[in-house]
Amino acid sequence: MQSNIEIAEKLNVLLQASHYNKKVEKGSFLYQEGMTANELFIVQSGLIQISKIVPDGRELTLRMCGEGDLIGELSLFCPSPKYMLNAKVIESGVVAIINKEELEEKLNQDHSLALELMKWISLQYRKSQTKFRDLVLHGKKGALYSTLIRLTNSYGIETENGIMINTPLTNQELANFCGTSREVVNRMLGELRKIEVLSIEKGMITIHDLSYLKNSIDCESCPVNICNIE
Image (cartoon, rainbow, N blue to C red; front, side, top):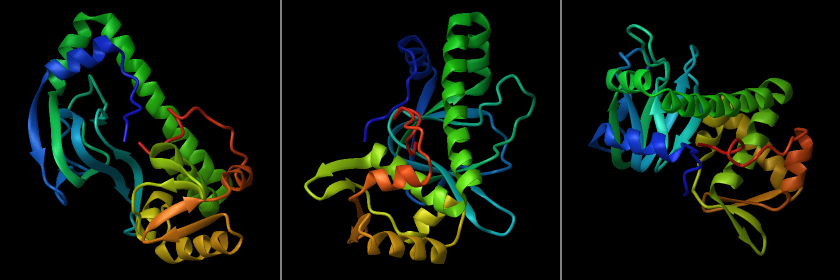
């Protein structure tokens, strides 16, 4: 999977120079909601799931972060910030750790660096806005359809039968992306299989009619750097 993070070279070099590496094991948490946010992280390898647990116990998955992705609480220049989300390790790997105070000092000294970071943060906000737009305007169906579209952009491989999402996903994992139950996702996937919009074999989803999904949620054909699952 290629990272779609568009950090300018100057920003990327400085971030890479401001860290030490840490191995992370599958099933562990890089950070959890409520912990003090003193660090930012760049994923060097592995896969990190960013999620939110809602009061009724359901999990809403917001991002799946791979190599090159910057994650953490971006409340810079705020006293005693807390992590608002959870970062769970899905595939073991290595993360680079950036001290928040050191980064703030560098941003104070280099305004062009601060501008590049603002551009990156703006991109993340645009991604979040489009995800919540689909959920609010089109409900659970919109959340699932937009998730499938984003998965094709991030993991899709063209085949003779359509676009195969080249990562195995359980219905519960899909439900977490949509903030709904596994049973609801089971039903909606069953409906899409009946009309041959998609097929599922050994946990791998192949999309046969991407236009159907896009038309159903009035897709605005956002650039791939926005419409993805990272």
